[in-house]
Image (cartoon, rainbow, N blue to C red):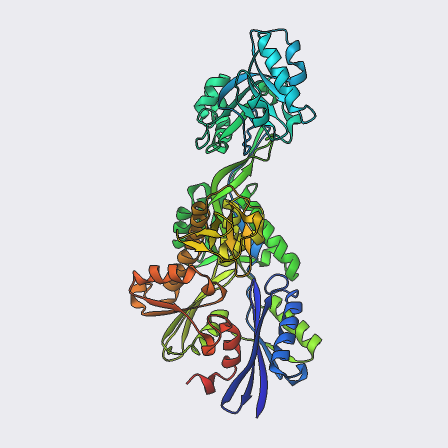
Length: 611
């Protein structure tokens, strides 16, 4: 009897389809397709993406929708991408007594301390024995400003530095008789409080400031007590590595500080077991505490803290999407990794950031089959085709992985997607051990986006997926491994001198001031923290002994197995345990993709094709 089946794998990032014709014991795959997942995995919003993928796959297979006899969906456990992942740290909200700035082209060099005064008021000051910092809004011409500063100096008024709104620092400095440090490009110059003590520091080209990036340097200039020194440490840290900065002190009574603690995580295990760990203890201690839980039942965050808000928000959002009660939604797994988090400094003049250490969390929720069953019902109603829920993703992936030439049972697979990392072990008997863990490609993107302070997830995704280069001239580029690449055609002018993401058909210049080596290290570190950590975690769970040295072969599948770095990282790490690891080639043609969709088709006729 001939039948046509469609396997549909709903992932966090992509939805994959495989269509095959069954004729007795023979099975022939007709087409496959991949589209972006619509909505959150396991919810009714997935239907649109599934329909689009099926339409393309049907067209490729040269058949009609009505020819499909059965659609099989994966048992899609919701892993709430952005909502289940968050960067947790202590939030310090301060109307800061200090603000800093770092333009590209400051003027002069040195350190100047004085009272802030508008440029057109300088020659009217009464206390000539006092040092002054000139504040220069954009409506003053640079030539007039230089003339005014020179005149004031000749009249015995001491001007030790300047803060300029326009990009005029060098133009003004070149015209001064007495050279002073000048910080320009201060967009929000109206925020600068006047008649307050301020310090301006500019370092020579190739050097960085030393005094204003040192808490004790600030303490010396502004005569701070120990408590005030602790408070301004964030500002000093934000200025580390800058070539220039300006810091201003506001009156003591204007400083308002409020803290929202990072908070504690409470882990509920079987047999009333309860453990707790603080976010401030770091990711390693959090995961060590998790390892002490026999069977994780649920996870909660401390009320009134950042991590409490993260878990509560996750439950509320998923409850709205699935129609379930928040009390019925539990956390079945989470991954914590150390991260660097950009915190904005309230009162800053140009969006300055303080890079703080924190913890990134990816969480997986546990629900019943109601969400994905709703997807199946909607799809069946809309298409008029029978739809059923297939098996667990990891088990279906193993069925698909076995179509890779050169593989056989027993086999271990590592399925690395956008939201989760799955592992499965199939014995010769056909028995399968599997696990489904939170944290994969989307978490890596989040870490890159945070640690480079991009505020652009699409750009972070490009950085994750592609190698880097630096355009040194119109015809040659330095690659991130140090080699030089020469081009017969000139590179686009807007890429000159920039670090670029090297995609297949285009170069994307990066606006960040981070060096190519720094960006590369952040990208690779994020991948190691997520994929290497989760791979080891997943494989230990499926090996009966928990000892990785008892494994011989691991086959990698999933979108992240196509990454230009991750398979090599895992091959190197697993090689330490004597494990041979490589990525799959599903059906001998698809590479590591389409494993679950293929497995869903094969599993429907398991007794015929898995002998």
